[in-house]
Length: 284
Image (cartoon, rainbow, N blue to C red; front, side, top):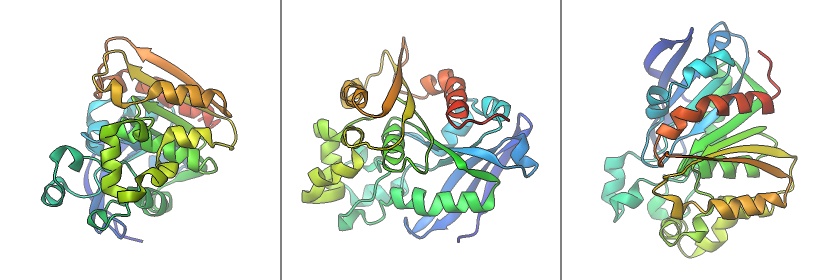
């Protein structure tokens, strides 16, 4: 298990917001994640954890520094962990891919094409970050949630639907719900999986996973901005239709006036934290 190097921290609402770097064996580089420890966790008491997956054009630090979530995480005594979303630093990616736009994407999946051998965010989160965090910090391992925004919302849905035994609560903002239904996003998938992109979507497309879902009931909170400029890429109606026929319920809220960025997260994060507390049956 890799050693953690603390790179910054500050006190917030009697808890601590911190960031750490460590060497990742899956990503083959130094990777960063941020973590908020609420007051109980600072004292060494075990608390639920929610893993936050950021969008393509953001960083783990933006969630920590721009949303004000710490107040509500402290009130509900919940740990939040946010990995840096890009599997490879931007400078390195720009040298090896043809499009700076495509270079931003990692989609929290495991690519199979040799040129993208470091794009193993799924293995990193599931098999490296989670065991590391839950060994080093006072986490209640039977009360675990996942949430995300945009590309991170896609990842959160994929992980939760594939691993319903590990994640008992789910919420997303402006999530990409079906890469397979977007020509541009399918181009990304072909970069990662080559000729096997269509088959790969059986594992990495929330609509496909929802259609095949056989796990216990899960209630998803889904917020989406009414002025989302990327709406045509998200395939939200398809996901909502699919979830209706499975053991899934979705509280979908169209928030008037909000675009695709982090403002909607800052405006609604309190509701999402309360949602996770209720779904995790946590009474601090």
